Length: 369
Image (cartoon, rainbow, N blue to C red; front, side, top):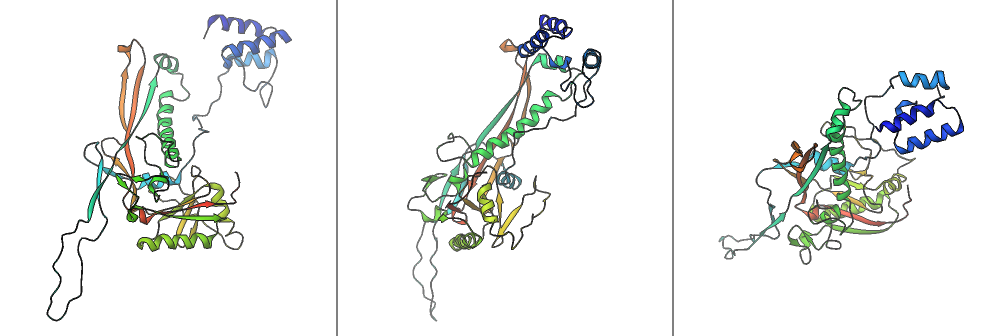
């Protein structure tokens, strides 16, 4: 703190005039420390006046809670579900290679009593698809002076706060990336849902396979063009099942779209929370349609319901870069008395069977919440 500002602050605290109050306000704006005076002087049990308020403020330590309560982060059930079921992969940080079968490799036929059958043909049935890892880094700075100031005087350790914030802000980055619009992400980011579940409308290529002409590499898209109801949702879920015989594990939509669907259940019926699983970080309310829970994701765009089959759309995390901490090192070679650390994570969301997933889009009538 500037000694000159502190001196002026103490002097003008002794003048109970309009000029003194105005000057104190000016000094506070200039950076004079506020802890010399109560934050709520004259309210509650805090006394006011020179003897009661000001003098007590000089000799009384403040009462602080032991936590810093974050106000800015949200929760994404989509990201929670993908990360909780993620698979850790070995190997180098080169592309993940997955072989996919796109046509039959053998030709069955009926035979007669003699057992004759046509000569077999050698048919190609498999091709690889490559998914690159997305490498995320979160640097954590620590100033030399911060450690001196906080020594034996900390309310919350600034390093602990930054470490916690690193996890929260990184998950927020991923959640926003998952629900980003086409063309808004850098090429080295994780793949958005609009690419993973698409028929070529938004993204012509998934991985290294072109969707055009390859119906087997396309997800089903349904243009609702109306308000959503449970009967429409059920109809399109059945449409996804028709593509490949498997039911989606869950659906995700935006808050307003979810509320519109919920109106079709209330008051005649009720929906319940599925409870909190020990393998998930949170429990979320869901509306069940055809045995498929539909979740509300604050990050998800309005007007669409995305249907996931987690047998094929999964998060793959490299085992050597799973929240790996590169410990604090001195910045002295850069002529600085500070330190820096970094948390590194290598992950990608991959899709191995697009036909098992689907999206309902152009849902109208949603309100702004």
